[in-house]
Image (cartoon, rainbow, N blue to C red; front, side, top):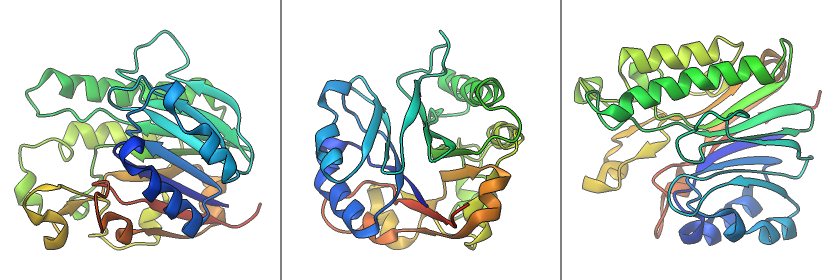
Length: 256
């Protein structure tokens, strides 16, 4: 099984690039974030023509998350599965080939003194609670998406440049570790060295200068860790005309 995650930064703007990438890399399951589409505008039929079932949650303004799968897509859950506010269509999950797959877009936080920073920490705490509520111990689980957290200093181009900023603060990293504490492993790290970034700012030539961050993660349960055979970040997808500012992250698993 090939599992991928990609913050596409608008499917409306990026759909031709997304379909080209799918045809080239043939993921079995692709999680997308920042679709920036309403549910009635989501290109479900186009994905169906490529062989995928779809689940999407978006209101057409910002955010928006999706899962497409050609290995089955059942028991779709949008939001946190309760009346809790997910702060703007940021989480969707479904059963895909026996694995509960989550596509998540964690709030940015903006700055350490911004009210949205507290929202970000609370959102990550709610994600951990959702895992506890939805996924019994021993479940096969993959939580994929744009976490807006660089797990370690090696996941940013220069730790000194981020002192006092979001994405690297101790509370954010602790909140991410709490999510992983459900029993999830940052599987990409097992196959890639530090400095393998997934996001580069559009401004100031950051991509070409290598000034990036690794904030797009695939966190998986132990059964998937044992089946993982490789992982890569497709830097080429960040090149060319009008790319997303994120690159896709791909993890391959042997059959169970």
